[in-house]
Length: 302
Image (cartoon, rainbow, N blue to C red; front, top):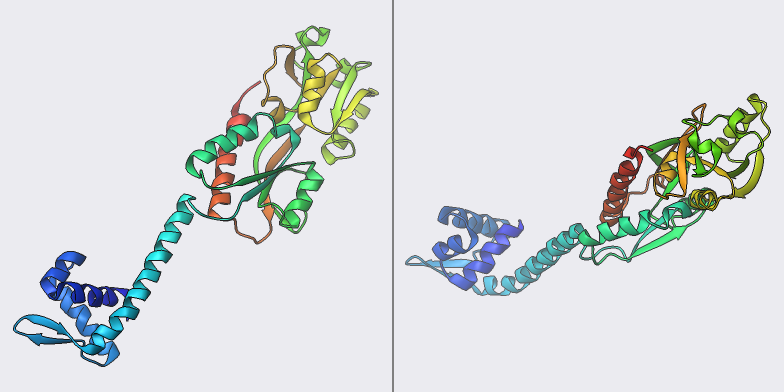
C-alpha cells in the first residue's frame, strides 16, 4: 500500500468517477483504475461498487476514508515541514557559532546580515573567545561550529576543515621610518617596540625562534591576545605589530602601512565542529556562507 492509493481513495469519494479523479490527480484514467485495484487487492476487500460507469463507495470505503485522510494530512505536514527546514522558515532554536574577537567588529556583522536574507527566522548566538576556549565550546557541543587556527594537531573531539591561510606581516605606523621598507626582517626590528600576540602558542614560538636565529632580542612593548587589538595599538603609534595577513586584511586604516615579514611564516585557519556530529541545514548554510567570505578576505592582497 502507498500514499498514492490513499489519494485515489480520497479523491474518488469526492468526485465519484475515475475520469474526474484522473483529471484532479494528473493521472490517466487507467492509472486511477490500476491504483484502486491495487488498493482493493492489498486490503482484500471491495471499496467501490460499479454501476453503469459510476463508482459507488461501500460502507467499508467510507470508514477507511477517514483514516486515509489523517494519513495523508500527516504526509502533507511532514512534506511541508521538510520544505520549511530546507528554507530556514523553521529549524533549530538557534545556530551557535564561536569566533575569535578579531572577527567581531566587521566580518561577523557582514556574515550575519548576508545569512539573514536567506534564513530570516533562524536565531543566531555568537560566542567570542580564545582558540582554547573555542575548542572547548566545540568539544562540549555548546556551539555548532567555530573558527580556529590550525596548529598541526587538534583535539580528537574536533574536526577542522582548513579554509584560509596567511603569512606574518608587520603593521607599522605610517610615519615610522620602517614604513618606507618593502619587507621587514628581524634585524630591522632590533630595539623597535613590538606588539605581539599568542604568547606560548606554536606559531608564536616559531616567530620567537626566527628572532633567536637572527640574534635579535625582541623589545616587546605589548602582549595581547587578539589580532584586532594588536592592529589598533599599532595604529595608535604604540609599536609595530606582527600579525597574520589574514587578520590584517580585515581592516583598512590610513594610520598604518602593512609590510611582509621575512622570512615568511604562514598559518592556516578553518572551521571546526564536533567530530562525527552533522550540522543542521541552517548551520551548514551559515558555515558555507562563512567559508565563502573567509576566502574573499584571503584573496585581498596587501
